[in-house]
Length: 259
Image: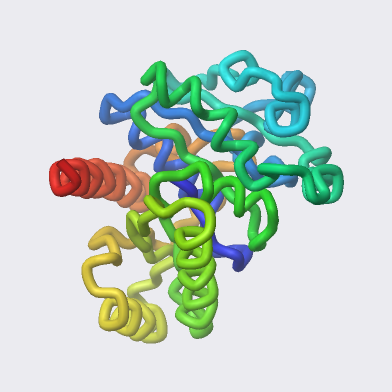
């Protein structure tokens, strides 16, 4: 599942970290792939740079086995494929290389065959570049974090257009798993209006769970912890647990429909 939005600051990495944590908490085996050269998901899961011996760069550029590059986190059931700044050079280095959009998909094939993980979450960079293209080509579905702000729908339209292009040219099976509204402030009438507009336009594609604007969620990354570990009882933690249950339920329903 690619977690993607070309806009920055929408809670994408925060959602990747905390959804991965929540899924592992309900018994799922999860791999989080940090596909952002900033490496924020790696930092947020407490992986110091000195321990990132092998990263997604080595997997994409050196054909290093993905199983050997993953790290265990402090959370049982949640593993990490970290990122470093060298990942920013992938687009230039690959140039017009054959199957350059399929690098991650090819690397993930052993995991698909082995069934080691029930969920693989790919935290995409805040842009529609080759790394995001690789993530969408490798994924079965896209989860879109959407901030409750004025320009939310405008950015979403561009992303959905990109998903359609990927589906048409590279990955016909790609689906939108759902859109999750983030940074929702019940005291702000604009948040409520955006939520209504998004639901009117996208209907059941939007998850019922909304992630509230919560100071504990913002604090947790500075301690290298998901908010569910930093403060289990805060509103943000409770929301991500609800989202994880909703994601699992939706995934099972979609599998049943395909069968």
